[in-house]
Length: 141
Image (cartoon, rainbow, N blue to C red; front, side, top):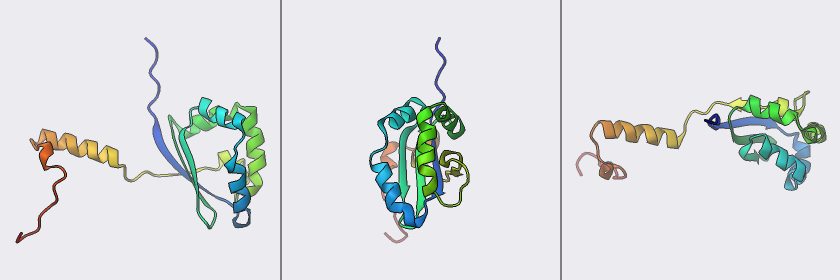
């Protein structure tokens, strides 16, 4: 039997781009090197997106087995070292390659997880699906 793949985790991280380099950061990410894109996919980065605020706040979102493992797999690609060197001067407040300076954020709410738990709990308690989606009523209605 083949080993099962580790489940994907949803990971969000933050960094900061120097405010005077935001336009350059956007320009470089408008056409990421195809070799870098292929390496990210091969290293297990799924649904990877970056979001940039007007003040330089950068939020990243990725689904992978582990941020540490995915970053370690990327380190094996020569293109990653070149990309990190190209990008390093755009970041604010880091003295390591950008992909070693991720600040992971704690996930405090997940709609799908809570819905699944609520539906399981509801089924155990004997509630039917027909009560889901009805608006609550207030006293006196």
